Length: 132
Image (cartoon, rainbow, N blue to C red; front, side):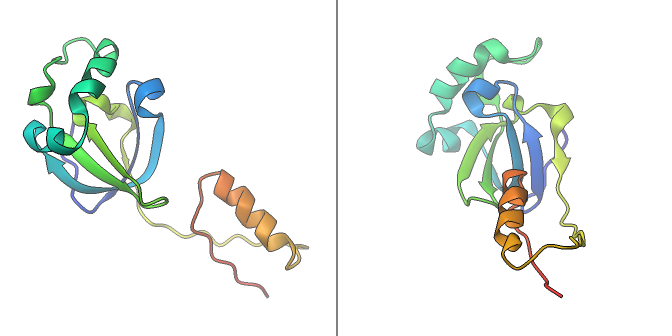
């Protein structure tokens, strides 16, 4: 896995979605921890045992050798501790803040909440509205 940068925002999927969750979006890397530090606060041994069957061939089953990442969800504020080996490397994308100007003709003030809810369901939690 390439080097991830502290403070950067990432989107990624895991190798064991039923256990770890599937797609993580807008996850800000807060830090990188060793096994010793990660195990002090998070149940990494229990999680490693549950995920072991999903590890790709050639990946060590020794969780004490893994690098652990602490992410914070930009959307919910919740933390995620995950080993680098549990992230699908082909799914990692650095998220860059971009803005799209979308105009909806015929929408009224009453429609704004509905439109924001629909965008929220699609994963867009930060939406600004400019009515003209």
